[in-house]
Length: 412
Image (cartoon, rainbow, N blue to C red; front, side):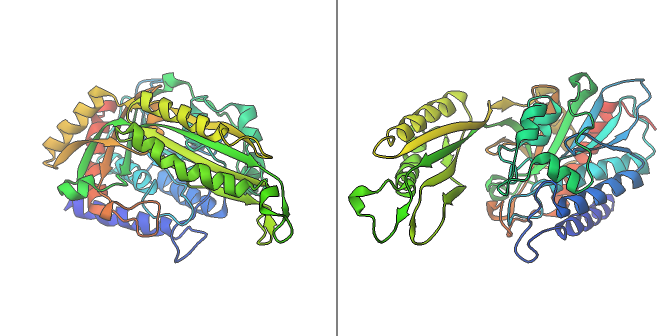
């Protein structure tokens, strides 16, 4: 009965949050510091208060809801995820983890659990990097990997700064940003798998062993604009033709490396973007991932060599590394605890590796981290068709509740 009630509440959360999109009927578009962010933020904060948590935000707009522990100044057991989305994404990537965390707090309140170590529910900003680039901004910021000046210098594609965008929805960028790692005892994150493995195995829970390493490069190709009709082909320095030639050769670099290495160009901006103008500048992304750092580093080097080989004949290319995160093994003790609680609750599980980056991998350098995956229908994510069963989210919330009771040393 509890699982059914939990499932229904979770589905209500998901359905409500999915309404906060800039593209109704065309998936979830919830960019950081947008009006959709504000509506979601207000919903999350209201639920935190309803569940008896003390709510605060930091200077990035990350949201924290705290159930104080009986040990004075003790570090928190944190549970949460992010609530931003990619353009035209789904309803579950991020919010599934946030609502599971909220329901952990609800179960603490309902069962009158008194933790010795604080329980803290966390909703993080800009994990996707869809507005300001790079990704994992909320988690990187709170542990000090994103400095004040770098944060202030970030702009979206319209030239709007982080500070302007925050102020636009009433957030205060002057609030404290960095969080001392001594205030964090553990971090638990639920996420949809975004792949096909759990569904194919018909297993509702994946205990994440490790998260892939990743880098994001930004390549800027500069050429010379000209008239599409009057510039002879042998006189052109076409930035888009050079970019297309580079991008077409990138997949082979990952295929040569093997070992599950992948490479993606997902963003490409052409300037001046006129049908009758030869492009004079193209900026595109290169996302490289692998389970072993040596493979990431090898492909970065090969990518740079390929890109620089196109310099000359009026083409000038630069590369900037926006993000670099090493592969991360998650905490063995918490992995064992998650498996133990799954067994006690008679919930089937398997071990799994994450091919996507998550806030958990940033925080794993600063505290003990555990992560659960739930199945994604047809392995789809980052699209309107993204779907996961709220019953699986409910199962994960129950595992996290039992795990959080253990980690916070909660008593009735």
